[in-house]
Amino acid sequence: MVRFLMFVALTVGGAIGWWIGDYGGIWTALIGSTVGSLVGVYVAYRLTRDYL
Image (cartoon, rainbow, N blue to C red; front, side, top):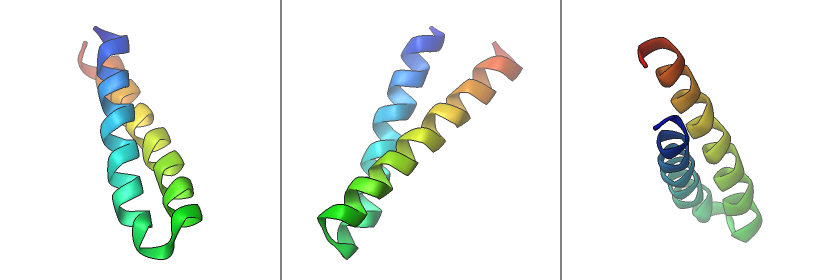
């Protein structure tokens, strides 16, 4: 369950980061996707650690 939630958070965070970074070009979108993925994994980790 923990890995599944991290995978979902990674996907959603990366998509949101790409969408936000797309306004600045391809490199900004790539960096935004990376940052969004890392934030998503961190949030999923904290949620699973605190509530599951």
